[in-house]
Image: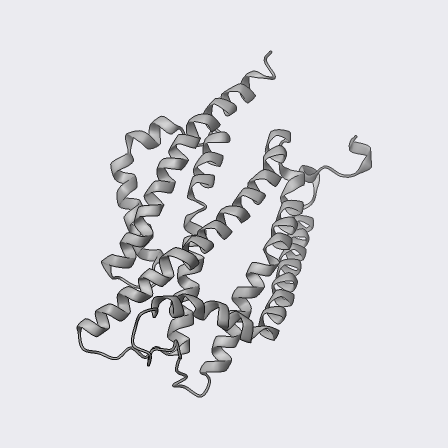
Amino acid sequence: MEEFGVKDSEKPFLDHVEDLRGLVLKCAAAIGVGALLGMTGIGTVMEILRRPLLQAQTGVAPAASGTLLALQITDPMTVTLQIGLGAGMLLALPWVLYFVGSYLLPALEPREKRLLVPTFLAGAFLFLLGASFCYFFVLPRALAFFQAFNRWLGLETSWTMASYTDFVLQMLVGFGLSFELPLVMIMLARLGILQQATVAAHRRHAVVVLLVLAASVTPTSDPFNLALMFVPLYGLFELGLAGMGWAGKKAALAKEEPAS
């Protein structure tokens, strides 16, 4: 079948560079289109982002209406661009995964090609699951905690739209990425790079790594938000560890197939 085209391994180096350039341009174009769509619907997006704040203010004094302040002249424009970029990345995610898959496909072995599409689909699903978990469960409780802490100190809560959207977007992205942990662990085991027994033997070290990861992903350094990130992250680690056993068996069977 080699007469239908040059094998990827035989491509000159400059051709690979040109392919990579095309990949970057296509991904940037997809994100740009998504960002434009996100900015045109900025009002709807802001309402969606403010919903956890309104939930956190349920039962609070009537004066708390979820109003966000714009203290700087450029705050509305900055927030619009920030939200547009975030929405663009989210809307363009399926296309970006498709472009990356098309770029990687020629260089992969047959067994790796079979894993490509399920991995991308599972990755997109886990990211959305993590962001949804953060949006519906974590954010309302985190915002309610900060409001209660402010009241305990005798302070009035008035957040700016820039700081609020910064906090919300970082939390959504952080949880979305953290939910990819079991998929990464399973794929490393499936490819024979990492063994379940090795990870299980270093569980104590993994806990420290997870604590550092949770602290670096959360936008604040308070123990409450750290716990909200660490507890599900550790649960995902144990889930990934269990999945590594299944993936390790599949990898062993795949190695035995050519010999049989």
